Image 1 (cartoon, rainbow, N blue to C red):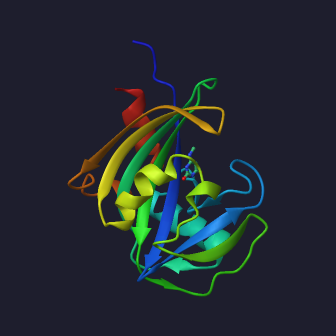
Image 2: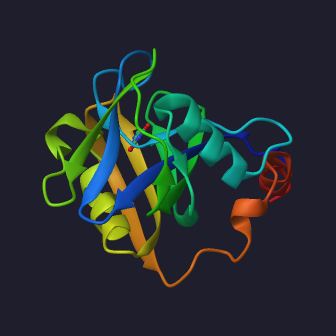
Image 3: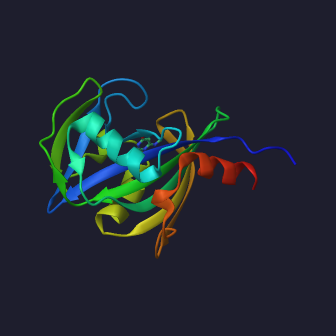
Amino acid sequence: MAAAAIRKQLTLLLLHTGESVLLGMKKRGFGALKFNGFGGKVEPGETLLAGAVREMVEESGVTPLDPVLCGHIVFKFEAQAEVLEVHVFRATRSSGEPVETDEMKPQWFKATDIPYDRMWLDDRHWLPLLLAGKSFDAEFLFRGQEEILSMDIKEVTAMPVDASAVLVAEVQTAISIV
Ligand code: S76
């Protein structure tokens, strides 16, 4: 049996407080100039939840107080072997005021006025589910960064109970022995 390719494990956290959503304009790197949730690579020995909280604090200065895993998205890119596996969290409460960092410029938006035309193309398909308090499991195949070749989005009744407490090393081991 061939070993499965390691999927890069990432988090994405959306802070949805009352009528507003905090997004960040990515200033450099992958997805530069797009508005996005906050997140990034989970570190070895870190749980998905701890990674999601750490990335949000690092990128925005805001600490999410009640993050809950609500989505799972696999991103494939036509010309790339690497697969991105994104664990999506939603929080409704936070402490601290957003600050601009080297990486991100945070900005509040009304939940009814999300700037989908300045975001990744996939966001308009799953973010409405998150904002409605729903959970989802999705997969997108991109050509470059501006075209979706195929997608599959399923609303799910619940995420695996304690998935957010899983260590990233365990996720990767589970995948490589499938
Ligand atoms: O919402 C998204 N954030 C990313 O960093 C990448 N979508 C996405 N799609 C490739």
